[in-house]
Amino acid sequence: MDWISRCCFYIEQIMSLAAGWG
Image 1 (tube, rainbow, N blue to C red):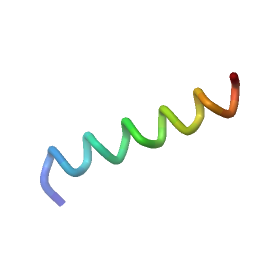
Image 2 (image 1 turned 90 degrees about the vertical axis):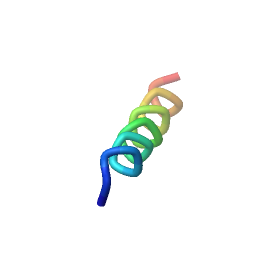
Image 3 (image 1 turned 180 degrees about the horizontal axis):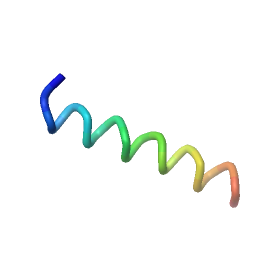
């Protein structure tokens, strides 16, 4: 997996966690 896909994956995971905390 290239870096852009990895970055997008991590961003999506972080956003998901942030939404869960909110």
